[in-house]
Image (cartoon, rainbow, N blue to C red; front, side, top):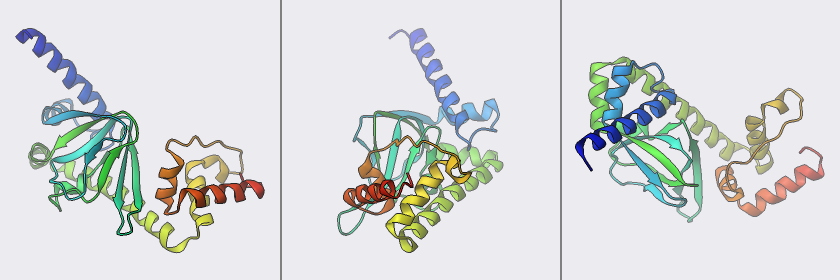
Length: 218
């Protein structure tokens, strides 16, 4: 490819990455120059459905921003069951914890559909933080959001029966129900993934949904 064509292609690629990063709340307030500096350290990875982005305990290259599709971050429990931690979609970011505290990924990440993610490389991003310390505060805010979600997940798994877990999930994902209005939830994952996220089997989830329908709760 001629150098002019390569330069044009790289410019378009950089523009696309900058637009995707700006949609992420972690980068939303950055100046154009700083955002360009971040994008220049990034790379894009395309994943097929079922393809793993990383495995637990593999060396962490950095953290990720979902550009399109959805990524299932989960852990495999000692009994072999999969516990879904969170499903990330555009413009979510995840795995920021690897920047400061650990050198390996603490869970598995797999694409639930054809997806594209942006890898924000660790060393380049840490260099930017040194130049702009306010960025570290935004990173902490993002990590705090994930921590709040994980605490809620632990509470759901520890203290609630399956009916309570499912009811809580439905209310979180259908705000209209909290105000007494009829609402519709479009399930953006398979029933198996939702069951794993709730810490139950697919069969138990199906029975609980049927029970809610019989009671005219849904």
